[in-house]
Image (cartoon, rainbow, N blue to C red; front, side, top):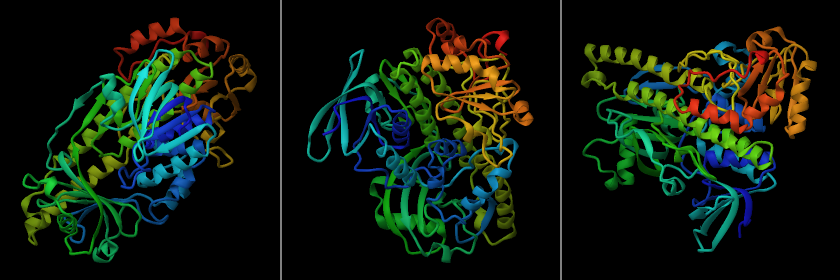
Length: 577
């Protein structure tokens, strides 16, 4: 039997649900997670962990463990484009291996100044790590093979009915809150009556409409292909368009191909799947089909709401992506990071329940932003079609390959060199941010301009001893003091009065002061700049607004209803800026 009572019930054991279990468990909050699957993912699914997700894994202490998984440490993470994998290479966007990324990260500045660089690893490996660490936390109960059948929001608690998939055992769980991280067919969302809004049904030559996924083992692949290995392999010809991520660098692949009008996914056999794979390779390499199935590309969908009462939604339950840019799973991780500390603060009595309203206010605009970026990448790749002669051994064929190579290399750089998407997401207009009246930098996919304008990721800096500025942050709140720690005393005293775990960091580093453009910066538990200023004298009002002062929030939420991501909130006062 499962624990009958907890603070939070999480439905869904994918990246969002498992990350949320870690966020809650690290804060001493009890949670019961249920998922009807027998275990974490078998299929590779998402294959790219963005740098911001890796920074959050670093905050939990398991970034290195995740970076050690997936491809061999010296395997290149290039994105390569071919007519067929064993035939003409058209172009290549080169990226570092895992060991190169680890060695290189502390030499970078500007857009890529970060505690962690991206890592190319299958979601199946990440889920296993997240599960292991969640299960090790006191008060966290992770349970696969249990299906949620119904729930009731009683106003002061929730009841959740679950059934064991194998033996039919039924149980009703009681909790303060319910979080539905149960995927695109979310039963939690369905009962709330929320609907996806946005764009769907987009048809493209590639990455639009019916797609077919094959998890394949082909150890002879690298002997049959005369090109340097790559993490992402894209096939570009009129017969069979596909993309294929290397899962282990040895012969396992996550292969996805566009189905043609005459191909019925219900009629595809293992033999047909083998032929699809071999057509993309351009050689009869032996292949074992580990799993296969259809899916639909062309989605850029976000639910109209993320919360009702004591029920919240996250991950694919509230946003559906076409997987270009690798943004879906990473957006789901940040949903959990955002919601976890807020639930914990309310459950511990540190914050008003009003704080929870900021979850939708912050995360929904980010989901709209990220699905829009993913759609742009899908259009760039999928609407660019190969000409008939691209495989011909003629001058016309060679010219077509040169032109396609130039286009696809530029596309690869645009889709996979995205520090602006990765680091530039902001919560401008949120009531859980105290603006100083400054405007954030422009939001651009391929450029990130570090800014301590409240509402965004703190600017990163490598310190003189070789450590990351982010490693000085506390797991909960942090006050960065650039001009003398004594000036932060009012914030420290107010945090203590409210029961807030605040770490004071004295950082008399001129470069850091220039980056943050203030004497003090308050960093939220999700590593977002909550406030900055030259005096902490108004600490009570600052923390009161962030943690849910009802009077201040009524004004802020009215303003947030029509905000854009570039619109700042009213500053608290000129005395604190």
